[in-house]
Image 1 (tube, rainbow, N blue to C red):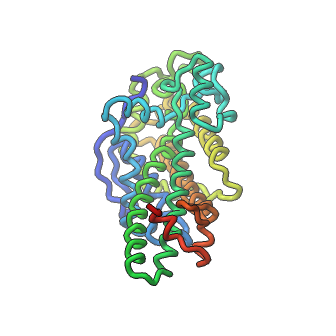
Image 2 (cartoon, helix red, strand yellow):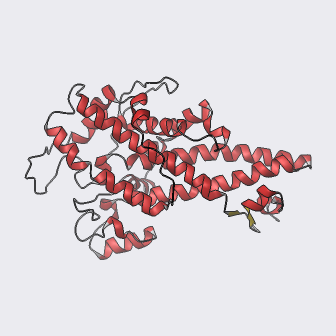
Amino acid sequence: MKRLAIAALALVAVAAPAVTVTAWGNTGHRLIGVAAMRALPDDLPAFLRTPGAVADVGELAREPDRWKGAGQPHDRERDTAHFVDLDDQGHVFDQRGMSIDDLPRLKSEYDAALTKAGLDVNDAGYLPYAMIDGWQQLGRDFAYWRVLNAAEKRETNMERQAWYRADRLRREALILRDIGVMGHYVGDGSQPHHTSIHYNGWGDFPNPEGFTNSRQTHALFEGEFTNRVARLDAVEAAMPAANLDGFDPKARTVAYLKTTLGTVIPFYRLEKAGGFKDADPRGAAFVNERLAAGAGELRDFIVTAWTASASASIGWPAVKVAEVEAGTADPWIAMVGED
C-alpha cells in the first residue's frame, strides 16, 4: 500500500493554553481543529464558539483517519483523498500529469486525465478535491442552518416550531462533524509530505543535496519529534491573518497546496541539519508554523462557507436563504417535503 496511516493514540486537553501531544497523526489534527475554531469571528453562529464545539471539532478532525480499515472499496477510494503527490515543479506525480494550476473542474475529469497520461489516481491522490468538496458541503450545511434558525424564531405554529428546533440541533451536530472532516483534509494540506512525491524520504529521484532516504522520515517527523514540540499556544501565535477577500475555493486550495509544496525542500534541508532531533527549536518552529498554516486555512474555509451560504437556495421547491431570513418566504414545504 502506497500510504500507511502514521498515527498513535493520544489524549489532549484542549482547554489549556498548551497541549500535551504524542503524535501529529492525532494531535496535529486536533490542534488545527481547535485553533481554527477558537479563531472564528463573533459574527458566526454562537454554537460554533462554545467550548464543547471547539473540543468536538478537535476530535472530529481525526475522523477520516479513523475510517480506515473498513475494507474495499471504502479504503481505496477514501485513503487517496489525504494527499496529492506533486513533483518539484508542481505537476501531479510527474511531468506526465497536469500542473496543479490546471486542475480540471471535476474529480472524474482529473481521474480520466491521469489515466490518459498513464498515471493512476491511487498513486497520485486527490486531496484538492477533498478540500473543495468539504467547503461546498459546509456551505450547504450553513444554508440549511440559516433557514432553520430564522424559521424557528418566526414560526407561530408550535408543532412546526418544534420541528424546526429539532432539525436545527441535528444540523448543528452535522455542521461540527463536517467541519471536522473538512478540517482533516485542510490539515493534511499543511503537511509537506502530503503534497509531494518525496512523501517518506527523498525517494528514487535525483538527489544532489544528499537528502535522507529513510523510510522512517514521515513517522519520526509526525510522531516522536512533534510529541515534544507541538503546542496550541505556539500554533495560535503563528496563525496567519484572515484572508477572505475574493475567496474562490479552487484557486485558494491550489495556492495553499503550492505553498506547502514549497516547504518540502526546506523540510529535508532541516532534517539533514538535525533539526528534527531532541527539542531542536528550528524543528519546533517548523512544526508549529505548519500547524498554524493549517489552522488559519481552516478558519478561512469555515468563515467563507458561512458567508457564501447567505446567497444560497435550499430544499425543494427551492427557497432563497435571504428571503427566509428576511421573513418574505415560508420554507416549511421546502424543508419538510410535500410527500
